[in-house]
Image (cartoon, rainbow, N blue to C red; front, side, top):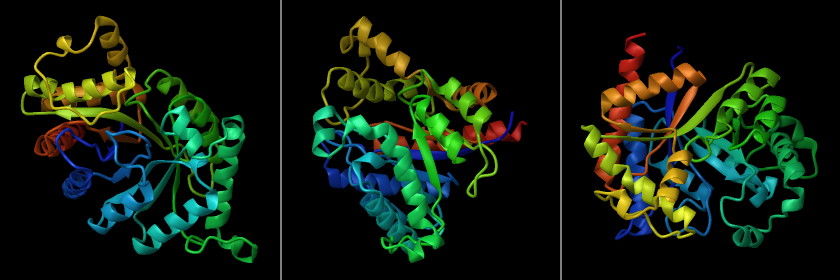
Length: 335
């Protein structure tokens, strides 16, 4: 079993009884905390029209986090590229990379990050998404290249900058694309685990080396909720479960505090659906987290694990990332 990096996915969660300003301050606090714990990167995800998630203006929030930290890489996990023009994203991330050299990642997805009606408001055309997304990635690579200096349309800032691109996916489609383009591949196992294993196999088997990457680089996002005791961790996890029940019920209200018994909230059918979606959720004390990390890595052999943690209490969320770091370090030390 090879060692792996660990990183953070943050959605700037909005909690009941808190403001969006509180969410942003908590995100910055988490970034500082995980930077001190030597997490590799801190990614923010683009979502829209959700009362529970405040990371819609992803590029702006990346600048806020990068400005408040010193060394941790900061980026998008991801920008939903068909929601934007390629030139605008090249300019935004060129600006970020110019402000924070060597620290900015550009993770790219094709999903809308929202519902159908909001996707229309964003100007998406679903009929051309599958051809538009690969074309836009090539456009970004062109805008970032030095060779584009003679073109009639240029990204300034952006041109000539080394901004690594990452392909995000929740199905096998993006695995083929990431392999073809020779780019790192990140899978959304924290909410769409069904095709993760076959997507990784496709990516590994069909990977073509590129200027950015000589060999496959696989990242998996999972949910992580750790506490001093298993009992506490499982209670904290009820915030995550409630959030997914809200998705099932199309209720986008802010994140709720933990409860003692989820059976008072979900039906047996809802419970089954949620637990299926959240099968890659590492919940427990340090020893349990370590064992789950070990089991996951023995199966998937990833290069990097990205931890998403929906915990209502901010200090307990910080503590969770600390325990996960300790679990990973303990696992590595026994190899």
